[in-house]
Length: 476
Image (cartoon, rainbow, N blue to C red):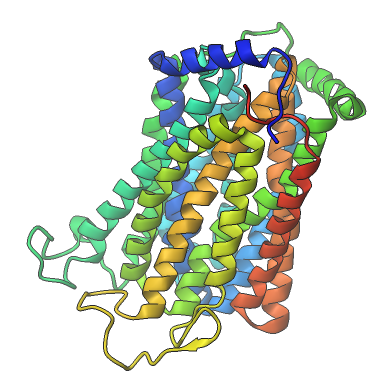
């Protein structure tokens, strides 16, 4: 069942030896940059600001999920049309760090202005939606720059898989710390009388005015800026090619045209990118709308959502450790298939959860005896829901890491940035389609659960499509 590639025995020895070597300063800086960028995803797009946007600014969880889907559709279309061109252009220009620095100057102010997104005043709803669109575009463009430097950050052959996994480990770990900080300093004070918890929210913030939720934007900006400094200083950049920006753009268009024209010569990369359009965007949509779904269906407030986010981020870090092991034992292609299957099974079960029902068919009385004497998640449906969410978190994190490793394995070494531009396209091309389907299903059936059915279909089709990819198997 395993696939043996040309030169595999020698290459496996090189990769195993490289994995045992210490990571360079540039490699650790790349990991830090990855983690600091992803705090924005966790705080703003999933657990804190997005539910606030949907439930408070919009005022209706179902309409809020539909509007968030429309926002994701918009920035997904923009990225789908521009990311391949961007990736090809930077391939011809050379250095990626100038692009990364430029995108930082766009994202940081856009995150800071979210502080003024208040109901009935401050930043209008339309302007808030516009800021979220700008952030979505800039973040995905930043992925092109950062991911294309992964082979250079590895420094040693075979360390790319390790760095890819560590990036998501650090991302989840840092996100956990930020969520715990939000809980300890801004949400629990004034609500519980526990030792070590401040009596009132830090910085004089008011929970009544939703200031902790609005703080998620500026806090993400601070973490992102700090994490970018080592990356810009020490992660190795590609050398200048001598082309100016305009000339690099024209040459990039030629390279992109040539890349698309010669995809027949790279059949397995093309097949992988096509199938990734489906399964990865299904998982991305799951992340984007997962927090809205939990808040709306289970009726959770800020405390439950923050604890849920901490739990998923903490346990999800295991996926970063799991992915390199599965990549090595099974090969990244089989690893991705297993990770998708685990996520899909848990998601199907999760959609059958309600406050008064477990796994579609088992009725539960929420007014009955509590499952345990705790401050939150006191019912069996809530505990089952959290458990399923933890499985999804592990599988999603592992899938992202293994998919990136699979592209590094399949892509031509001289076109890494160009293919990572296509990789960004495959990761966002159906975000607009998936998000549009989520919006349509949610609006048509006026149900958050119905809105998740297209996500299940995207992941299932993507997992099946990977069977057509040759390569990426276990090396022996």
